[in-house]
Length: 358
Image (spheres, rainbow, N blue to C red):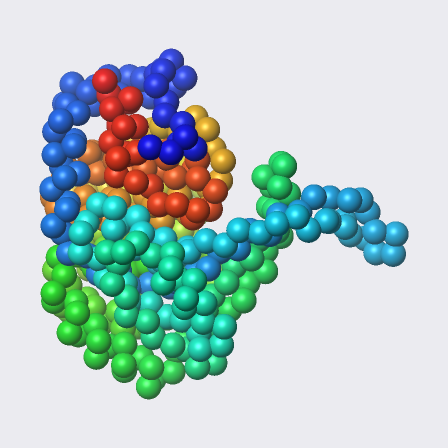
């Protein structure tokens, strides 16, 4: 296991609420049972359909205020490039499941295909489609290297919906692929790939359908989960579920129950940052799980990691409190990784869970 992952071996680091939760959880589940549950995911066949993103971190250090403009001048130091978005999700899932296929969109202009292919796990099969009128999506963040603070971001993106000819090619491909898989994950970043017709082609054939719709600067207010209906599993963060309900200050549990019912979803998971997560099942029952992280390096990609692990767990029929527990454990590991530098590995997760409940 890599030294960059710091396991929480002393539960005294946690507040009393978290320690009480873990004590009760340990009475219900033992370590070997959780390991067996994770092992049961190996043969699950997973299809991922979503927006692939290349994440760039350009590191710099402030030099001072410009004498000619009201801005801070920075010295360029270095850069790192990561496979993010649906690429990162495929890498996370591939550590749990042997059979993973990714359907995604690249740009013919500056496709980054070689980089993407080199940075996907060996057991990820790919179906790349190519947008004629734009690049593969790149999100370039400028980061203060020593403080690890993001200064600003530039997106290289054409987020208009794909044309009808390309849409038909993708639908024809999905109609063949979807029935072959036990689980379909839709990772919708709202960047023009997942059209209504593409969703309809998936919806009618998926055995288990899991969806995440992300709210970001490029789509704020225009990419809500409410455009979908009848998913089996939905994973959102608090701002995404509040936007969907158009309720900024209402009780989050009431909002989550309403959105799950409106979507007719079997299960809705809402990540709440430092407040942990809540899950709502088909009967409206709430399951609340605290966070397990004590060291936060970078939150970029943590939500994708949570979704990547919890969706297969749900599809395999794991109990919902165990799904949430595994998701929050994954989140605690993911926030210790810079962006999508590496996926959360199954062995790291097992080691961390052992430290939580031993």
